[in-house]
Image (cartoon, rainbow over all chains, first blue to last red; front, side):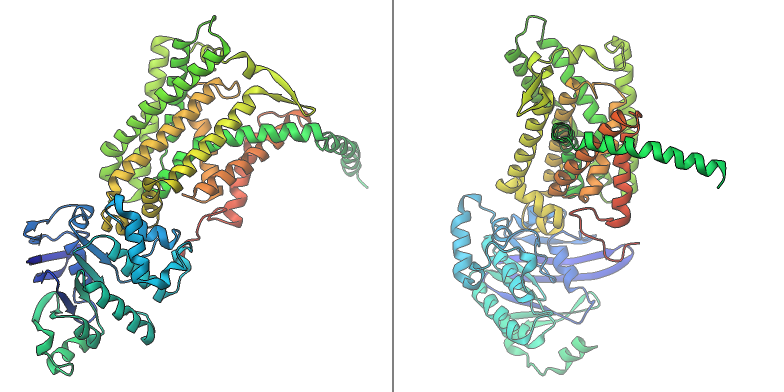
Length: 232
Length: 346
């Protein structure tokens, strides 16, 4: 089943034309990577899907339902979670409150929290600590756990490895692998080997357009054309 | 030595023992305790007036200049309910019952009005320069004040500056003075303190013990992220605006009973200015800062009131001192007691 269909979206910031007809799909159970160098529109694509930045043209459909123009909370309520680039913890709230607020089904808060601490056992010792006091790696874990407890069918994950030490990146990757067993992922990642490792398919963005797409099995990590796009 | 210098020295020589005598009077445990109780009752009123202003700014970034006018409308509306419900034969307990009925009616009416103001007037301006919100709420305060002035004069319900009719509905035990552990305490001061504590506990419990409070605390930090978690932040804006206005209006009901305030059109400005001082001293948008600042401002206000009434004999001056607190705070710690400093600000 197609979970997400982005069809020919054009998104602007003021007069700047950022996305120039991006189209992509994510199937149920799939992890899809969105790769490209800085400033080509990867984050804007995620913001457009969530309607945080509404497109001027094109459409976004979730399970076939057109959600273009809806409020962000309405889109999120249809099973979309967001793990943003800078994690965006509620720093004054405790770790537990950061998770609690993400549970959409309020009757199942206890069970959801227990599941999150089962998947991320390291977080339990920090459950009463303010999220702002955690390290970058710990905050990334909370951000992923927040996506997990939200009963999301699809998580939009933006640069999960950014600013983290290599050892922590491996832990984050492992967490995403665990989460991807239950949830589809649309993963924005500049770390090309990591993206290829986690994803089933990929889309390569350049100047607000999809310039290449395919299965990650068919692409070499040394692919010259892709490396050129990523390093330009 | 010149004659002027000698005269100045003579003035100092006269003033010094007077000051020492006054200081000793002030430090008398009975005086200190009574100033303390007076300060806490002022703090209770300030915290009630300001709680809504803080919540609204914390979540929405809107500095509501109409807040004082809505407190003033609360005072009139509460006074009207009290005047309707209370007669000369009404007993003390029934009068307290009437007060709480007035609180419930005024809270409900003004909370709905506040929600309406947010939805119809403030909401279209969220995506614009904050100056638009300031102009809108400032304009609203002018309109509301004039409207109340017209209604009050049309119906002739306020022949004097203070609205005596509402104040006369107070039960006798609130106007009485009690001797408590050797000090004299006015019943209304204790009632105001109790009501202020109740308000603080209720708001604190709402913010920290309810799911909606969690939404509000999260939305105050990052409304976009909160929205992306499936929470309708705009609806939370409406609820908070309504609650904030409702709490301010309830403070107005209490002010209608207090002889130092009373229901009057100038009450709008008289409550708005100290409310802004409390909000800024506490740190914009922080509830605990508001509570701490209200206590500080209340105690300083009560202390200076004692000095200017008993020593200097200049009763109008104490109001100036709370603005001095504001000036000192803006110079020493512009972000307020519990506020967060802006990075890169001027």
